[in-house]
Length: 229
Image 1 (cartoon, rainbow, N blue to C red):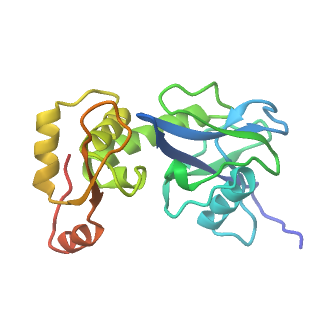
Image 2 (image 1 turned 30 degrees about the vertical axis):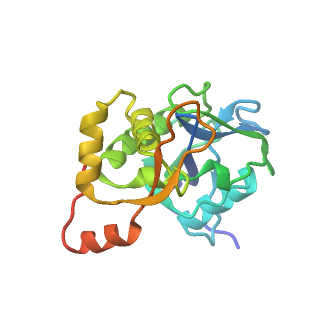
């Protein structure tokens, strides 16, 4: 079907900032572009929105096709539409943020992605398009989110130590936190359940493992509870 409009219209794309966490470091998933423009450069996974697609569906499809990742949660960040951001023409992209547990996903590049890898979120390679600005915006979003919502638990294994959680928060904030104050705030929230298990294979005293009490958090939200770390 052909279309005719009085005014030219920009194209619409989606880009996904996928964060993971490993070995004390926040990581971001990038693809190596296999086609022009910016062939061979690293970029956020994404692509054009189909005429019959919702934005969320397009973002999930591009992630699945280019990286093999299928996140449970995908949150819209904001739109980016600076003129000249895409050499193919005026293109508006809607960026999304996803959080995944690295151990639950196997990354595999496909379609127009030549490669897909995890990189340090705070020290990525040079990125195509305006993806450096999108990543910077997503990192700022994560800093706010980790302080005001229990998003950190979406990056950790089901069972974790208090030290694991503190290191995660520190990696997102980019700063060290006082251990005593952090644990005081953590326990005041009342959202950690002891599992009765301890770390294994560590060259120090094994720490107790916990899990996030999602049911209690959902109940507290109905009472006007505000998460603060």
